[in-house]
Length: 171
Image (cartoon, rainbow, N blue to C red; front, side, top):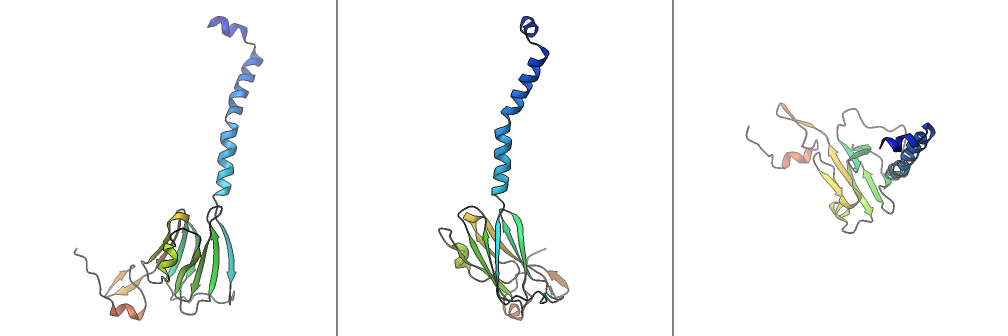
């Protein structure tokens, strides 16, 4: 072993270290290439959109759009919200068209095999979820309302919710 080290010159050590470092280059380039491909692309097609029209201050219901667990968009849901459509391209060859109309939102169209999110149709009450699993797209409705002195984030602020049964959990 000592004989092997005596045959190597100082510059030989630099060449060996350089070759070892270059052997990791394909892994590094592949990692950064795929990081860039996995970012979802968003295309907006807003109709009747007015930049001056904003959600009223009392509106606390909103839809959260997630792709692969990362929040990509948020829509305020209120009575006079403009009709809006956005197309998301979560991965190459996949698309989801999201439609918001007032206090509700849905996946209008996608190219997933089972069309589960499309069949879910409109969601608008806090706690409701629409999921397109093959594309990793999730629409969650968030909001809160006051119910008898306590705040319940899983129930709607609409007047029709008073007709629904209330779930009472033991303490």
